[in-house]
Image (cartoon, rainbow, N blue to C red):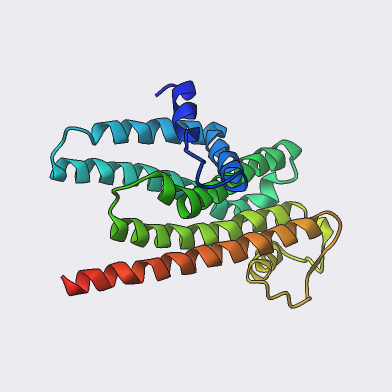
Length: 232
C-alpha cells in the first residue's frame, strides 16, 4: 500500500461522538505510526491483511500466524540490540558516532513501543470490530509485559551513555539497576540523576506506571471472556 493511501486509511475516523480532545490525541498517536521503521512494518502487515480476504478459516489462521511471526522477529531483533548494548559499551561507546547512532535507533524504538500500546489499548478497540478477543488479549498481555522490560533496557542504555550525570555511578550495571528502580518507582537514593536526565527519569516513571495500568487493564478485560468460554 502506498504511503499516501495508508496515511488516509490510518487517520480516517468519525470523531463526532468523541468531541475534540480524544480525536486530537488519537490523531497524534496515529501519526507516530509513520516513523521510518513503522512505514516498513505497516506496509508488510498491510500485505498480510490483504491476504486474509477470500480465504478459508484455516488459511486465514495460517496467514495471521505468519504476520505474528514477522512482527515477533522484529521485536526479538530489537531485544537483541538492547541486550548487546552494555557489552559493546567499553569498546565502542567512546566513539561519538556510535553513541548517537544507537541512541537514535533506541529512541525510535521507544516511541514505537509507546504508540503501539497506546493505539492498541485506547484507540484500536473503537476503530475495529470482529477480532478474536481471547487471542488479542492474551497476546497483548504478553507483548505489553515484554515491552515493559524493553523500556528498562532502553532507558538503561541512555543512563549508561550519560553516566557522568548519574551520581554514584561506578559500573555499567548501575545504569540498568537505576533504570529498573526508576521504572518501578522505588528510588532507594543510592544513585541519583543530575542535570537534564532528571526529566528523563520522571518521564520513565510516568511511562512505567502507564504500562502497568495497561497490563492490569488487559488482564481485567480477559476475565469476562474466559467466563463466557467456561459457560459454553
